[in-house]
Amino acid sequence: MNILLLGSGGREHALAWKIKQSKHCNQLFIAPGNPGTATIGENIAIDLLDFKAIADCCREKDIHMVVVGPEDPLVQGIYDYLTADVSLADLIVVGPSAEAAQLEGSKAYAKAFMERHGIPTAAYKEFTKDNFEEGKQYIQQHGLPIVLKADGLAAGKGVVIAHSHEEALTAFEEMILEAKFGQASAKVVIEQFLKGVELSVFALTDGHDYVLLPEAKDYKRIGEGDKGLNTGGMGAVSPVPFAQGEFMDKVVEKVVKPTIAGLRSEKLTYHGFVFFGLINVEGEPFVIEYNCRMGDPETEVVMPRLSTDLVELFISMSQHTLGTQSVTFHENAAATVVLVSGGYPEAFEKGKVIRGLGASFSDFTLIFHAGVKQSGEQLLTNGGRVLAVTSYGNDISSAVERSIAAIQHIQYDRKYFRSDIGYEFRS
Ligand code: AMP
Ligand code: GLY
Image (tube, rainbow, N blue to C red; front, side):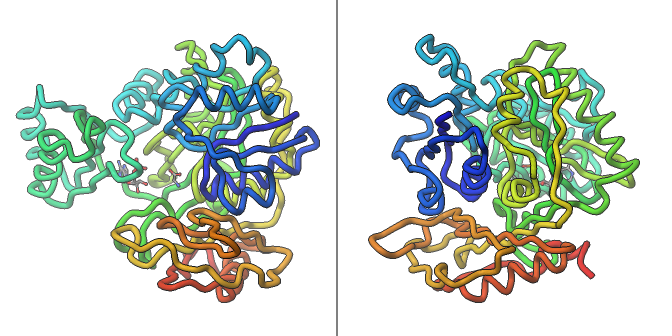
């Protein structure tokens, strides 16, 4: 079948790499894609929120499956738009309905969902300008640190972890009174701080059954030793050594199964990935967030570790046979180290010439483009996150070391990366 993948980052390059290996994939189109995806399939210049253009493209290119990479089109209803189009009756859309995508699109919606289904998460309360004064009192009585979250999508920037009551009050005022994140912060969730190690668990579901993909851990802070500002993700590793045995059983029994059962009992239409952002608090899993898509840069290690044909899983999802599917993973570890633009996640310059991508890299290394632009013969930096360099290894240490060795061949002005990805698990 012909497949259309939506998105343009490292996640989509990794998805394209995996999808193209499927025996079910004939032509692969990526909209809008990047220079990396252009080496795998055909890029098409369409805006991700132009649903009509996407539907037209499906008709024109005889597309039978649309895989949605990022959250924005999902939260804005691309699933509902495409599945309502009678001329696209056989189309398989990988992603939840707009209603179910609220699990990512609204923190308050996700918290209420978890409360209804007894899923472990931090205690919380939600506030708007209507109960603003109550919110201020709540903050003053709250133990430290205090976690404040803009309710809506804020490109990963809507979370503040305040270490004093003054800082929390300032952030609260900025979000609600000054609309720091626009409409996304008209409502704010204030929650208890959880201390532990985070991990990302991924399921593919049809809203009834599910399969689990390899888990991963991402490294969000800009600085080594997890210091400094939050970014979109500086690297990731898979497997996560503590995600096994009793702990993983708890993740399945206390988080994954109740979530899928909740989708079912609430009749939410969900045909896609569920990303469980978890934290391990002394052996107990808690949900920090749901996302309605794969993670970035987690996908850059999850796809390389997945042996099962991904398109076959999508077909199985559409036929409601996921319950009988087995998923196999490569035994090897995978690690990805993200190369970013100097200055990121604050102001940075784009348009720097990238050299060295033609080097002969190890067979165990994959280079995924994140923020890269083609300009004539040259590749230029085009974002904060520029490339994700993934390697396989016998263990996490050797995978990370291989990526770092590959990175030495790649040059651009003010290149920066973290050399300590996976540090907790390295020997
Ligand atoms: P989110 O945008 O929800 O992924 O939050 C961004 C980051 O903030 C998470 O990856 C965590 O590191 C941190 N965080 C969010 N909620 C909490 C919490 N309740 N306790 C501790 N850390 C949190
Ligand atoms: N790596 C975290 C995310 O994709 O949201």
